[in-house]
Length: 374
Image (cartoon, rainbow, N blue to C red; front, side, top):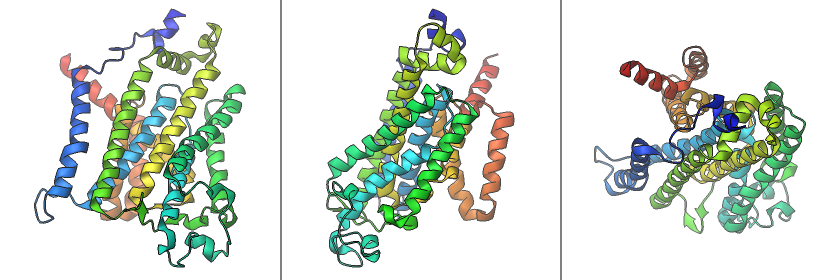
C-alpha cells in the first residue's frame, strides 16, 4: 500500500507542497503581468504609444486564460487520474449560460423591444420569465447556480459511470454523447436559452457598462487571478495524499482497490471539481467575449480542450496552460493570415505531438534540459 501511495509507478512525489524558487518566481511573474503590466500598458499609455496594449489584445488574452482554466481542469482528470473526458465543453457552456442569464437581465429595457423580458423571449411571444430564470436578476444567486448546476450534473453522471466501472474509450464516448445531447437540447427555442443564437448584446454587469475599458480590465484581472489560484490549488492537490491516490488510480486502479481504497470516491471528487473549474471559466468567458450559444457544447469544443492539455504536456499542470496559450494564439494568427488552413494546422499539430512529443511542450523542454546536463 505504501508503494501505491508514493506516487505513479512508486515514485516519491517531488517537493511536496512547495513550489520551489523557480515556481514561485513564475507565479510572481504571472501576478505582475496580470496586476501591473497589462493594466499599465492598456489603461495608462495612450493609443499612439508604441507600447500601448490594444483592447482587443486584452480581450484575446482574457479569453485564452479562460481556456487555460479548462485545460488545467482537464489535466487533473486526464493527466493525473487517467480519465479522458470529451464532454467538458458542456460544463464550460453551463457556466457561461448561468452568467449570460444575469447579463441578459441587466439589459433591462435597453433591448430592441424595450421590454423587461430578453429580446428573444419577446420575439417568441413569451409573456413571462420561465421558472429557471426566476433568480437571474441576482448576480450572487446566479454565481451560486454557476457552481451548483454543473457540479451536480457532473456528480450524478460521474457517480453512475464510475460505479459501473466505465472507463477508457467507453467513458470518453459517453461524455461526448452527453454534451452532444445537451447541445441539441439548448438549440431548441422552447428551452428558454435563446436557441441557436444563444445570448448576446450584453450591456452591463452590476449596472456598470461592459464596454468601459476599466470594466474589461477588472474582468481580465479577475480571470488572471482565478487561473493562478486554480493552478496553486491544483498543485497543492496533486502533491497531497489525495493526489497521490489519484495518480495510483491512473497507473494501477485494481491495485488501489486491492489495498482497501475506494477509487469511486476519489474519481468522483476530482471529476466534480474539474467540472466546476470549467464552469467558472465559462462564467468569466461570457462577459469578456460577449456571446454564449450552444456551439460551445459542440463535441469539437470539448476535443479542443483535450488537445490543449496534450500539446502542453499532461500531468504537469503548467503544460496545459502553455498548450492553451500556444494553440489558441496560433489559431488567432492562422485564422487571420491563412483562414482556410487552420484546421489542417491543428490536425498536423496534434499528430506531431502524438508521434514526436508524447509528453508535450513541457516534456520536450525537460528532455532537452536533461540532455544538456548529461
